[in-house]
Image 1 (spheres, rainbow, N blue to C red):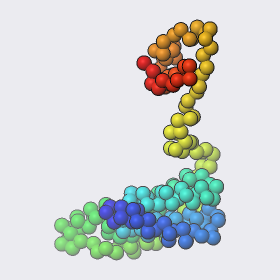
Image 2: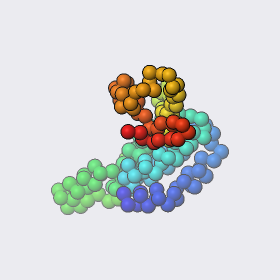
Image 3: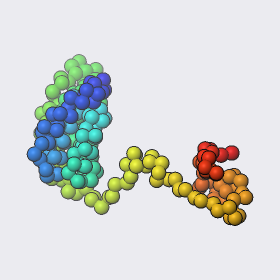
Image 4: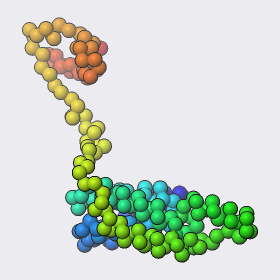
Length: 199
């Protein structure tokens, strides 16, 4: 986890992955590169840490390609899981089995003992994911980004209340109570003066 955090903070992989993705415009080619990198890294780093490093890279690649990020995210998730089967430290079950073997037989598994099965399995999985991404549903439209959700302009409306209106004589609390809390008056402008958060 410490190693994964250090790699994420240093952004050391960003340049390497960007270089590997350069010139690959097809979704299949980009997913093949991303899943391959994720699988190799997750053999030595916890899969959650590996995903934390690659999620922003995958989303960026998807946006540059004009594709849905889900087409990239699900394959790298699978790749991180299967890549952990290559080494002893790639996944927690491998460590658990090694400790059981050490207590029962007196000798734990070595770092690459799992690679005889894990490496071919990972290669097959990466090859499948490079083309199998087409099975992922495409009709999911992305929602608003976090930045868009918190753009306050999307939620503010200005309202002019004429002097003769029945609303002009009402208190702020009365106006807010009319819509059961779905309205919050954040300011009043009267005679050219603005009063924020009126009582």
